[in-house]
Length: 171
Image (cartoon, rainbow, N blue to C red; front, side, top):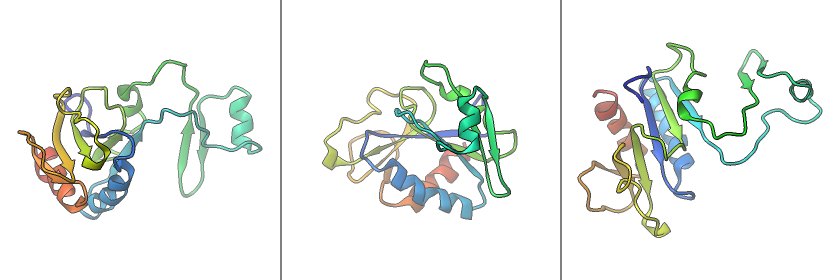
């Protein structure tokens, strides 16, 4: 997918409870400090509301407006009603205006084929994903599994940032 879409797209795939959000919340500031503007797509399996009942944006969306763009001097949110079919990652990438970011990190969409780093914790006893996913380019774990893929320490976001910059973005 990163071959077709600019900027590069890198996923972080793992089973629930592995610590995707924890790692990403530590990794993104490091990438920012190194001069990268990072965008993020996070897939949720749950229904959610960004706006709140009683607020104007909520009332107008419920009245049928879609998309609703909620904007202030500090941030913008675009709220779109989607069909009941599962969204694709490619559809979500169009939310990023050309030149707005240097890297798009994806949390979720692990069934789709695009470059990903697998996160794995031995204490969860979950199977490795890379066995069935050839788009995984590295494994960040708290163990050292037998694999041909580059191994990273899931608890070392500096090391993961180095891999992203020196291996993924440099490729």
